Length: 230
Image (tube, rainbow, N blue to C red; front, side):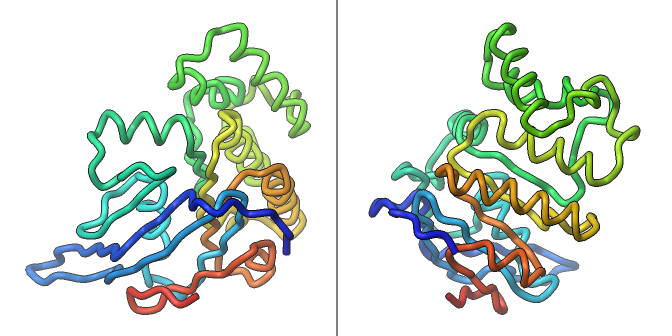
């Protein structure tokens, strides 16, 4: 556990979040009136049975999906009222995502994959090159910079995915089973990187089925049949 001096104003405040899907004429509710908050500097682990809506929760928190109903505030801004353009800007500026399946771009080298989020932010070329070089060194993957994802091991791909998520210095990192495909030593390395980021002040939401990974958090949120148990 980390003993952070957590700021009183929440980074995220969600009230009565609902999310449902139509399936063969009937509606399936994944989240039903879920409310939660997240303070700056926290690491929160989201746990629950398979299929209970953990990834849906994460996608809504990360603004990759919209709730069917409810209010969602990020840095006191009402996400549920934002235009697509504003939503996209907030997402690119403040949020980093780490997926279990890496989601690296197959046609781009490691260097180019790391550079991509900086292109979205319109960072100028000299600074882009400097920041990519810095993070390659930090993650000890300088020798991999000209390789393509399919030339890397699973552990190396996940390292690149984490590096890509943090290269923009996001306020919030969302990690969906970040060690799910890795052996234990690789998984521990990823969790230690996330822990160090959290120690430096980055806020993290992690979806996990691992009790070991959940222990890295300040707080555990349990999803149960569409509701949140704290």
